[in-house]
Structure formats: C-alpha cells, structure tokens
Length: 151
Image 1 (spheres, helix red, strand yellow):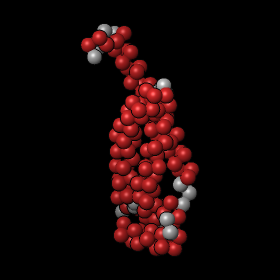
Image 2 (cartoon, rainbow, N blue to C red; image 1 turned 90 degrees about the vertical axis):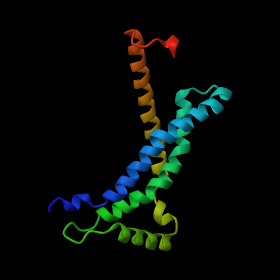
Image 3 (spheres, rainbow, N blue to C red; image 1 turned 180 degrees about the vertical axis):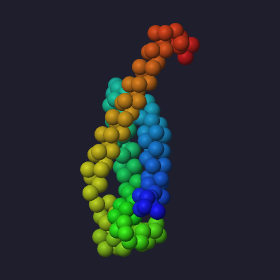
C-alpha cells in the first residue's frame, strides 16, 4: 500500500524505454552503417565521426518520439502522494490542454538541450560498445579462440 505511489507513470516509462532501446540499439547502428558506407567512403570519415553523425540524425527523432512520453511520466509522477493518482488518460488530457494553450511548445519545451544531450550520450554509448567489442575480439584472437582469416 505504501509503495503504490512509486509506480505512478510506469506505463509511459515502459513506452519510453522501448522507444529508447529501439532507436538506440537498432536505429543508430543501422544508420551508422549506412552513413559509414555513404559518407565514410567518400570523405574518409572514421567510425567515431560517422557514429557522431548517425547519433546527430537519430537524436532529434528520439526526442520527438520520447518527449511526449516523458511529459506524461512527469504529469503522472508529480501529483500528491496522499492524493488520488493521475491516470494515463487524465495525463493525456492535461497534455492536450497544455498543447492547446502553448502549441507544440507545450509538448517540446526545453528540448534543444535534450537533443544535444542525446547526441553526446548516444555517441559515447556506442563508442564504449565499439571499444568493448574490439577488446573482446582482440582477446579472442590473442588466445586462439578466433581466426580472423575465417571471418
């Protein structure tokens, strides 16, 4: 009973997590591969630079998809703990009212910095992933678990 308020906003949070994982783990690598082929071959840009460009393309899409979900989370989580919780439908109605009053600014307020943050964090995440991938591959080569000539 006392922990019930902790679960407010979990439905939008699950949608946010799904969209985030899909765009970050599927969209960005596919886009990076395409950019690597198109831009990397013509300009000589390396993996890090093409990854940054791919993140810069994916991040605005990510913000447009996830920001309304984040806004729903905030609306649902900021009601009084002792009071009645706000349902998803009520939160959507409040968001519609806000967007009617402020237009798209009502939904996407303050997201310029969010896009910039998303570009940096997505780029760093994938750089770390590439670093670990390369380290494990080199370890396997050094210990005879992988033969690069067969790949």
